[in-house]
Each structure stands twice: as structure tokens, then as C-alpha cells.
Image 1 (cartoon, rainbow, N blue to C red):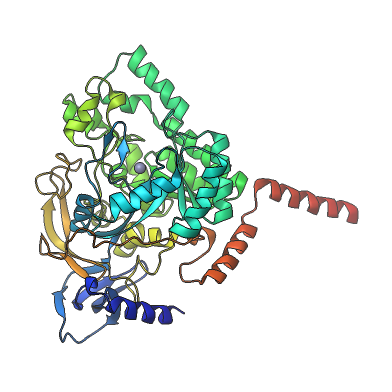
Image 2 (cartoon, protein in one colour):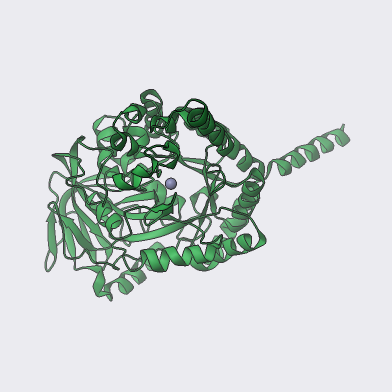
Length: 529
Ligand SMILES: [Zn+2]
């Protein structure tokens, strides 16, 4: 099945001139989530991987020498906010600057969060896709849709988005009271609807009422106005509570659940416990959680401290180390960034009130490098696990594997070459984001992405962006429902998909259905006695 699809897509791909010339990546170590092949070549034709093997011929192709380097699938960032209006401002990276930054850092695909416009999901999707992304995109992208209210129209629009527009995940906020937050009742409706549609529900897990109370105590009663008030007012216990509650509600409904940006050890523990009892809970953490700690929020210099303000907040070093260990050990499944950047002028909105500091940190350009340093160089994970955590797992969960997230014949040619010997320093002075600060400023990393290929186009090579980086060259990638959390796969035809979905639904019994089964068994036992 796959080979036929590959052949078709190769034919389709080669007819498009925007998919680059033929490229041969020569003599590298090709790493996927489950193999490392030394001295192996990768041939790219028409935006797709045409061959992987030894001694491939190079006639008429651009040759990239990968001797002593690692050739890996481009990074997939499952959590970004480009051109996002938030707290009265808009993130300063749009789909152009964000994509350029991503490509320079080895990320070739991302899933951004579209928000409803005037509570209208379809309007939100169209705004994000056609106004924000399409004219500016340089690499491929897809969307999650946030659901911030509940009505019959919202429910109907979710169906339209899944069936006609390639959305297969919906995010609910249990925080941001009075703005994005949904009630437990609305969250439950959303979980049920996701299950019907085969869409993956996602949750921002912090107790919004608790945060509001915490802010009242810290700002009004204690008189703390500085950035450290942000960390003090939304402690880890509120993240752990909401994580546990969201997981239990997903278990009640019988649906998988994806918890975004796990920052604290106690929230990670809730995910681990749920997985241990067999629930299909997916835990995403972010670069800032595994590489930074909360002491930075105590810096007396407002600009320095405010750049680290994000929600949930960056936790203690001990908590962060536990989250990193959970990611390395497999209790958490993947790494995003929550890239949502506001420059220092924008952050100054909260100079006298930490509650008004726009939330968000950078990461779309740094994630692949920081993860290499923190996980691989630190000896915590193999290069194969690195690929799984930064690319393959996201591709499977959001049902775009093996089109993305691996190096295989027929896959999109989203490929990076990493030189493990090159040392470099991360800095706002050299990064590609529009941010004037960088939360990883001055950090040394051994290992650098020296080449990035985006759908067959050589876009980043030898420290420079190439002429292939042009606005509008990135493509929207529609995502089908019933991804790996439902047991499905992107390779199934729509008929098969429906079957897989039905099977997944049958397997995913609600707590009530399980109780009924149990009672029936007991009743039968009783009558037999
Ligand atoms: Zn986010």
C-alpha cells in the first residue's frame, strides 16, 4: 500500500518545480526512531525521499557531504503560537520569521494553535490558514484548534473542521479565567465530541480559579508586583490538580488525552500514573521545562525576569530535572516549545503588574539544539530516542506518519544534517526570531544543524539561509482523524480509517460502560450460582 502511495506522490511531487532539485546526502549516519545506519546515502527527488542506501549514484544532483554527521528527520514542533493575539498584544514572530527561525534550528514542520475569532471556530481556522500562514509560510505546517466556549454551533464546527479542513486535535484551557478557560462541563462536552470525531483532545492543565485566587493573594494581599509574583501565584499544585482532573475526566469519557506543556514533576507524575493503569494519556513537555529553572524569575532586572514569564511557569531545578528524566525515560512522550514570543517592549506592559506581562518564551529555533545538549550529550537518550521525542512521536500522534517524522522511501524530504562536533553559542544577536531577547542566551551547545532540507528544498546550509527560503513556499498539511492515540495510521484509506475508528471507539469504553459490563458479568455469575 505504502509503495503505491509513495510512487503516486513521487510522480505528483516531481511535477512541481517548487519542490527543489535532486539532492544526494552522502555518507552520513541515517538515524530514525528505530535505527541507525552508518555510511548511508539519502537521495531526494521532487520533494520526496527517493532512495536510502549505500553507494547511491550522484549524477545530476546537488551533493551534501554528511561524512561523520547525523542525517535525521527534520524536527516537528507540536506546540507553537505564531501571529497569536494574546493579552492585548500579538506575538512578534509571524509565519515567516517563525519558520525561518525553525529551519535554521532544524525544525521543518510544526502544528500551530488556531484560536476562534469572535467565538467562531471556522472563522478562526480561515484567519489562521489563509491570512496568517499561507502568504508567509516557508515550511510545512498544520493546526490544532482551540475550543474556548461551548454551543451546538461549536460542536457542529468541530465536525466540519475534522471532515473538511484537516484538523484532528482540539485544545481546551482549564486556565485563563474570563478569557480562554472552559468549565468542567464544557470540557466534558468537548471530550465526548472529540471521541465521536476521532480527534485528539488537548488540555492546558492549570486550575484557573486557583490561579485567580493565587494572583489575588500575591498581588493584592502581599503587594508583590514583579515577575516572581507570576511563579508564586500559580504554584505546581495547581498544575498537578488540573492535570489529574483532566486525565480522570478523559478516563470517565473513555478518550485519549494529550496534556500540553507539562512543566512540573507532580503533573508529570499524574501522566505516568495514568499510563501505568493503561490510559491513553500523552504527556508533552517543552524545552524551557527541561533546560531552565525558576531562579531567573527572581532577577531584579524586569526585562531579564519578564522574558521567562510563561504559563504554567518554569519550575524549580529539581522539578525540571524530574520532568527531563520523565521525558528521557519515556513517561512523557514528546518535546514541544510553546514558542510564543513577545519582545521586551511588549513584556513591559506588565512592568508594574506581573499579571499583565504577556506570557510566552522562545524555542522554535533552539529546541533541537537544546534537546541534543540536554538529552543526547548528557547521555540520557540515544540519537534514535532523540528522533522519536523531537519528530516521530508527533508525526504518529497527529497522523502524518510516515509522510513526516522519518527517513523512508516516499516520505516528505524534511531532513536535517547535524554535525555533533561543532560547538556554538545561542544568542539573540545571532538567532533568526524577531525577538530582541533569548531565554537561552549564552548557552553553549555541542552539535549543530548544518543543513536543513524542507520538502526537498535546501533551505539552510553551512550557516546560511538559501534563496529557496521564499514567502508562501510552505504548505498546509491536512491531518486525518483517528491517529495513533486511537490506534489509527495515516496510511489507511478513508474506508479503513472508519473501521479503525469504530474499533477504537469500541475499545475506548467509558467508565460507565465498563461498570455496566462488570455488573452484567456479576449478574451472569449470580444467575449461574
Ligand atoms: Zn501554548
